[in-house]
Length: 366
Image (tube, rainbow, N blue to C red; front, side):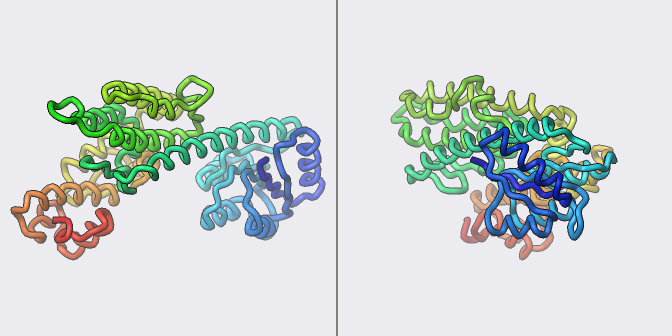
């Protein structure tokens, strides 16, 4: 069962919704609150999976409640019921985490329809969570992988992989897969298949994470009732495992692209990444990008963060640290020279950013 919290200041409406849903659906445990303050108190006692939230209430309105809910780290699915037929109210509610904004008046049947829709979303999330836990368990059983995405002699940034999936860069993800499997095509003794299973699990975990963010169940993504991820562990040849994983990447990313749309945004994000990777030595800010792309700087920053999970400045620092790692491995330059070479005027600031991202100092990394 799922926990539903109805937050509505009018007692008749609040109790009416509760009674109606209890008589029609048995998948919810239902609690009620007369305002946002009381709702937060109830959530302290037990979290909710789904909140039906009135916009206009005494003590704390719907937007204030949503802001406080997110500040506390809550992540239930929230549907807002409102009498305000104005765009800014809907926009504010959705920006602060609501999944739907419904205008009053609504009928009992409409409320029931919303509740059934949310149950479907929760079912999908539960299935995805279970699958991701399975993938994590596969990782925990193998000692060749750590949290940063290091598999034996092959290292990569898991955050970068998730960002590539989010932004629809299928060719880059597939290129990463093929580079990993290159040693299995070389002459001599190939690496163990166990190594490949771990890498496959990491890629699958990245795909599952972004599918979940997009509201897509694993079964829906791959056109079959159950997730296909467990199939990998029954494949005993590296070339077959590589082909299987490339098909999975194609299927997942095609489904994410269809769900998300936003082709123009994707192209803008790709251009931002290209500029940063080419101009990282410069003072690359949203203002700098705005002049290059002739687009509003606030818009650029927002869509880049939505698509990648990173602010522009965070991504610039990651690119610079990645370039610094390459120079440190070469061993020709001093640390302060490397800092200048990758765009940092201050060696101390460079070392701070390097440690924050790489988990060690430049000197220790060398």
